Image 1 (cartoon, rainbow over the protein chains, first blue to last red):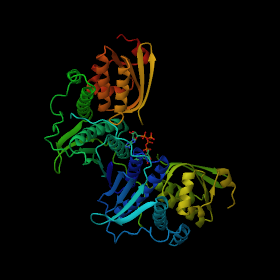
Image 2 (image 1 turned 90 degrees about the horizontal axis):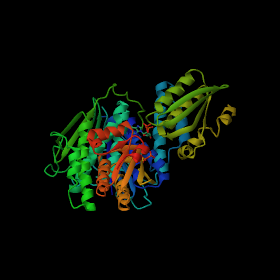
Image 3 (image 1 turned 90 degrees about the vertical axis):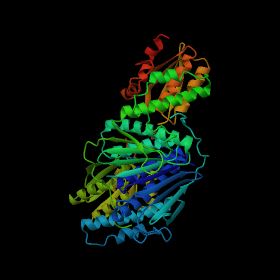
Image 4 (image 1 turned 135 degrees about the vertical axis):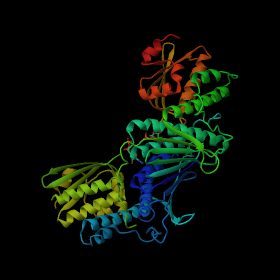
Length: 173
Length: 173
Length: 113
Length: 113
Ligand SMILES: Nc1ncnc2c1ncn2[C@@H]1O[C@H](COP(=O)(O)OP(=O)(O)O)[C@@H](O)[C@H]1O
Ligand SMILES: Nc1ncnc2c1ncn2[C@@H]1O[C@H](COP(=O)(O)OP(=O)(O)O)[C@@H](O)[C@H]1O
């Protein structure tokens, strides 16, 4: 059961770092190739959400990503933003946000460029949750185990037994 | 100054994970492309050393890798193996190991397959240190800041000013 | 893979060919491109997504923003996409109901409105 | 990139063409290949490294191990490499003094011993 933990400063570039790591570790864990796109996308969405929250409320702290490759391939993305600032349910338990309604609703506003950008961002946030909920069969949102924040836990089956440990051990260092 | 922290369980596959992350973060930090090979190799060597030590003495604990991209691109690889079990100087302060001597010396032994493998591994360890010392201009080996273990610190110059922050912030999550 | 963008005109339509990854990192570049086009009076836009390799929610948000901008000018924004993995993203999010999605640029260009 | 290995004979020489990454993860596969060849009596080995994309100390250790194994049989192990980034690794480690390194397979095959 190999584990990788990743902590990223909250920048869009490091959402990519997290996607890259998730895809690499998933591939190495022997996961079905058809799941890779889904994992990349879901991990990206969970990280985009956490990075967005950190940038608003906690830009100096790192977003945590933990990847474990047994018995299922599991990714936990944890933010450090107090739960009263972040929507804790992520809209995942209730009805799915209706994108058509979202698009229509966000048509309100003064029509300024800033309004438009804010509308896009709130659509992106809603759509991100829809993607997470729609893509990931095994998805959990819980309080961060230590301290403030929210943990988004996702897992996927590892069909073949975990790849045998390969590589060299060095008895003399 | 963006930071990525990575913790890997001590397996050869995750030495690759660390190389992959180091190359991705380095590239994104705007480092001179010609340094990427060197960074990949040096980070791999530092991690191979730490992973080898952990597998012998501390297989349940994770190897830490920290990447910071300002003012220099800096990578610190920290093991958690008591310094009396690990060669703390890494042979980096004294004379370089002489590979020809290493090869000749390792010719001793009963000639069994196991002997041969051990000889290869000790050559690899010596050569790994030679690579680190030879590749990295700014290299430091110190006690791990918190607790047992050794930290190998490497850094490279970032020629252009750090890339401007790009990407989207989400005001509404 | 970075985002690549190239723009050309076909009649009164403006084709934006997008390649690479439209994600939280690159979507702002696409947003700027769409804003520029609309502000220059291009109100019928076709976004050719056949060479897109990755699309996330931020990218979708920018496409929705583009749609709203052209609609405010009585324009249109049509997508060209046959890649199943990208179409799936529109399906899951329900945005297939929001965007006209075509199989070819020719089809999108000859579509009404 | 994974390690790729392919083997062929040229006269009494055995050419091992290596591609991809020879590192702490893949080097054991190369070690097994070299051990198999030596145990099958192939004692003059040419390792063609022109398609190697990455080489680390574990990979170098395995090459040294191969060298020692063939020498124990009065054989030879020659390398073919013109890639500067790989040659640099042999230089830094001093292993250029240990391995005969050739510019082409033909040169390695026709070398004495
Ligand atoms: N700094 C980075 N952090 C994380 N992932 C990255 C980073 N840079 C690139 N990637 C990802 O790696 C993949 C290839 O990236 P790219 O930088 O274009 O390199 P290349 O095309 O040379 O392999 C893409 O999926 C991209 O999202
Ligand atoms: N599990 C992994 N962890 C880290 N790095 C990996 C992993 N798998 C592959 N890599 C690295 O990523 C690069 C490409 O890897 P590979 O798995 O062959 O994927 P592809 O060829 O499809 O891009 C190589 O440098 C390799 O060392």
